Length: 466
Image 1 (cartoon, helix red, strand yellow):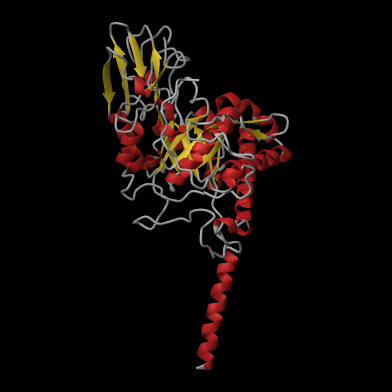
Image 2 (image 1 turned 120 degrees about the vertical axis):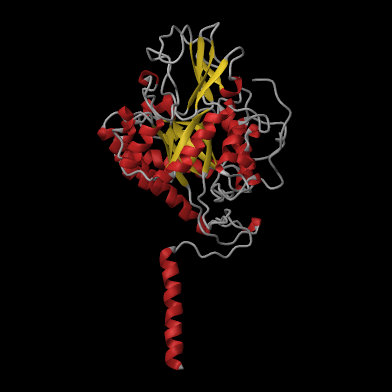
């Protein structure tokens, strides 16, 4: 009996030691967690399909599109665009302090004391509180700022500054991770620098998570809690001239997910009108599909990128061609647009007087006005649903949209709502339900540090554009 008891005791001690070695930072004793711990779906997996939308910080101006307009119930991730990089040091910084952290909405008080968070980032935090499955990532770069990446990312010191400053913004502003949008590394060396940057960012995010163990706030009833998992993603090119420079297998290993920018395949830069987000190449008119999603996905997977980490980008806009006979024909000019020439918000399509044409097998659609000889390449709801079927067939990780202001309202023909429904969510156990982080004990903003107790996400009266 003593021998059996000793064996039993040894087994228990060994199990305890194994748990501690597996995660020495996470003994969980909590009355109110520092973050929302992962739950499980019906299949025992929190990592269902991702529904990812970019929200741009300039949308609050002319577009009059605000965080309160986002369909939080239908999204799993919001990518907040964009932060910039200082080309001389690699420091990551915000680009519009008024939009990001200063703007007061009607529900914000002007009588708060101390340093407090406002702007879009406060509203996003409140949206996260209302939807525990909704994660918020800071997107760094984008087309405009990508020229600032090469110099600092070429040195260990520059990459370290980038990663430290980016992780500091995560801790200070209520993010759940980082999205890196470098468009594009132009050779193998820059591709290697990009990978090194991602590894450095991953290490900084993990170090930040490790600090959470001893950062409980007794005033909020918090004791000890396991650290959160801060996510790392990238915006990835669909053009082989760009992704040929990327170590795709290694990027897939370090990133939580990879957002494939499966759009802008055709536009004003081409000689003929084409399909800007074709799923498959056209066999009858190959000049209309200089690029295709099928080729990009096949190349990524062949290079070692797990299909489950690829998130398929869908455009919430269309690209126009004027004075043209249609796909494959020459054109002259691109005409007007919603906010820039030749680019129409998805909610403004099809254009009045146009006929909609679709190829559901090829995975493209467009509208054409024969009288004006104008074509706009965009995804109809039917084509978007076809792409959902493609995501399922290929075992991909979900869908992404650029960008949220282009969609229609929920209940009024929203693409996000339709596509998420096709994926099997929300509420059907098919979407990513991993929980977000809601505690930011290292923030310099008093209201965020305290969890914005007593404040909730609320709609507000529509404002005139500012």
